[in-house]
Length: 108
Image (cartoon, rainbow, N blue to C red; front, side, top):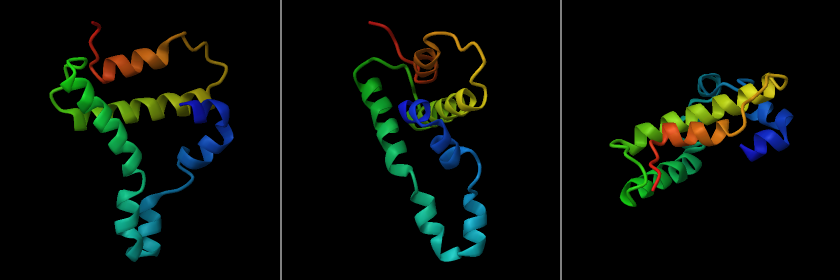
């Protein structure tokens, strides 16, 4: 999120649908295994963080992999919309609200 806010043009290039993995696979099928794991390291950190929250009693998630995917999609969508709709009156604290709700975080 910090990257998207600091460098919106670069974020748009990386995640703005300018690149399509399926087209790359069609052109170079040997790249498929590499493309399949592209970004999974970062996603793994998010999934592990949510799993750790469950273990610590801070999340009610019963499926951290799926909930981490929902969180990943939600945050990418939010970041993309902030870049595309910078004039929208974004509510304060919306990013934290998205994280809290999609990660099923609990307040102690």
